[in-house]
Image (spheres, helix red, strand yellow):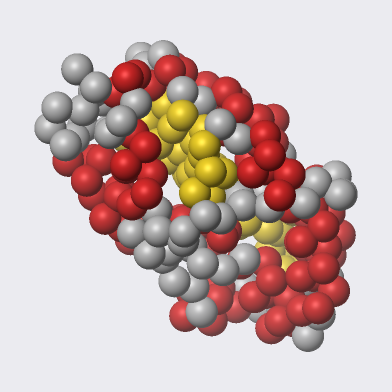
Length: 219
């Protein structure tokens, strides 16, 4: 690992860094699980505009207590190989970021546990201790994911050729196609068709194998 050139890894969170879709767990707790999961699947397949699909799903969560994220955290697990991949790359001087269509209330905890450097996610509005069904501020669309890949690499003085982007849904395609190495991870068909690299096994250590054989990262 020590002979790898320094780089930046940017990952999606739901169904990539973790095994679950956080918003689907919230939907289950709110009693609208099937409805939320259907919208999630269609958005990830590229059938729906992500921003409008997110707002529609979040509206169904109105009234949930803000403490619900403690319950969500209990139902989330890191994808096999995720923590080891991050640890190995960081030991080689890499930085790691996550860009998520999910929510800071969940993603910030994961980032802390996994020693992740950069985080961009959506922010839910909470008033009087309850979710209002609204999102505050900028929605993390595919364009925002691409922008964060570029801005973080620029902040680190790294060319895009020394970046790796990993995701599974249509919202990840722009960053996957822009990165030095773009990987569809256990991804939807639309993403597999358009990504330079495809990993079908749910083991994020497979990402390291691709990096270690790529000329951009080998001295």
